[in-house]
Each structure stands twice: as C-alpha cells, then as structure tokens.
Length: 257
Image (cartoon, helix red, strand yellow):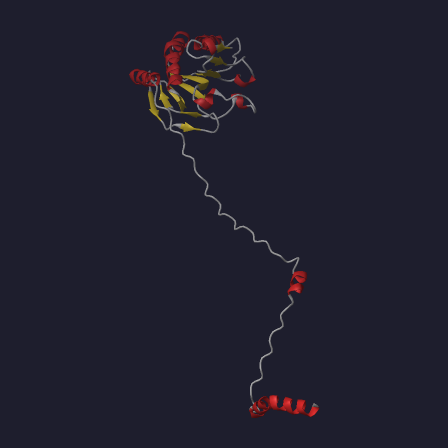
C-alpha cells in the first residue's frame, strides 16, 4: 500500500519535473510581489495624519468707488439771487460744486472777485450766492457811505480773511460745523481806502475815534444783512475780524454780539 502511494505521487509529479528540467539555465526569475501592509496597521500608523481639505481663498473683491452725489438743481431763490448779482454788476464766476467731508460742501458756489462799485474782495472768496448778495448790499448801503461820511474817501478793497473752509466753529474739536463749511460766512479783517488808509478790524484806542466810530457803525448795520455778526469784544476768537454769516435760526432770530 505504501509503495503504491509513492509510485502514484511520482506518477502525478512526473510531468512537472520533466518541464522544470527542460527550462534553460538563464530563464528569468519571477519578480517578488510587493509586500502589502495589513489593513489593520494603516489605521494605527496614520490615525493622526488625516488631512482636512482647506477651502480655496476667495479673491479679494475690487474696491467699489462710489459715485459722488449729484448736486440739487438751482432753486428759484438761487436763480433770482444770481440774476440780482448780474444786474448789480458784481464780478463773480460760478465754480464747481464742493463736496467736502461730512457736512462740508456747497452745491452751487460762486467765487466773488469784485463788488458792484469796483470794490475788490482781497483775495477773492468762494461762497453761496445769498452770502455774496448780503455782502454786496451791506457794502453798498452801509460801508461805502460810512467811508465817505467819516473819512471823505472811497472804499477800494475789503480784506477777506476767510470764506469757504471745511472746519468746525472756531476750529474747535467736537464743536458744531461752521457756517464757513457751507459757504454761508465771510470773515473780514480790514478795509482799504482809495487814499491808502487801512482800517484794521480791532478795538482801536479812544484817540482813533474816527476808526472807532466807523467800525461801530458798520457793525451795527451788518445785523440787517446777516443773521450772525461777531467781532472784537465778542470772544477771543473774533478779536481781529468781523465774522458775518447767514445761518437760519428758528423764528428768524439773529445773533449780533
């Protein structure tokens, strides 16, 4: 029985042994199969290396440039005011709208160079038409007659200290917006006469009674043309000039100090 098993096994393996002996000596050796990591080892080895994909950053949006607001159209009052200046032969020109920061700005500013009788505004000033017309009327009706009556001379120029400028009242931090920032104000520091005399806006000594009388008279009458009149004696901010503005108050109240 044992002999049969050996002979039987030899009979079964004989074809394979004959094929192996028939192979040439330089037959290629089969490439070893790569080792594959057990699935269980992967989770242990890489459990702390799981990567979460990050979202792709969005491109920065281009900064949008806001278009400036269009100025409001001229009101009927403004049209009438400009016509009055032309008729009075005030030398001025319409300038571009002013759009300042915050509340600063003038929709329809004009630049005044010379008043009707040839009186120069030195330097020319940017303001609203209403402010220019009040300045013209006050100069023609009050200042020029006072120069003639007191000094027997003619007015040549008005010293413009300030018209439009974007700032707060008296340039103080936290204060309300100034009327200068709306084109509604002018600061006047001197009056120049044809004969060469220069009258500075200040508190003149008693010996200079002509200048004192002149400044007092024109300051009093300024309140008929402007809603705010300040000057020497009002406060420390107006010791060397007249401040004249067109602010609108309740019930038409005027502040002249």
